[in-house]
Image 1 (tube, rainbow, N blue to C red):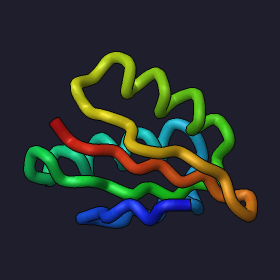
Image 2 (cartoon, rainbow, N blue to C red):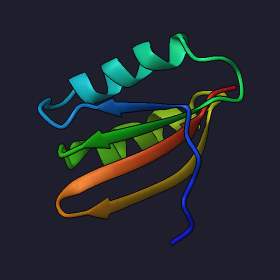
Image 3 (tube, helix red, strand yellow):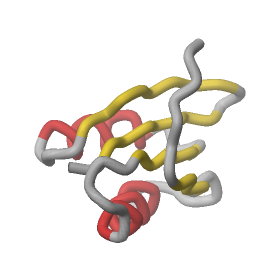
Length: 78
């Protein structure tokens, strides 16, 4: 697997829906355009939530994968 460079890491593993998405939106607000946010969550609902969020935003999902019951999202801010 190719390593994706990221500018900020957000660990929201202790939160359940809707908090991972809300905290991600908040973190994206403070990043510069073009920056990449890596998000880690254990909430399986985040897969759906993040996919819908990206479809309706100008941001780009660079990668999404699951490892050891943790879901990782790499989101590029636009």
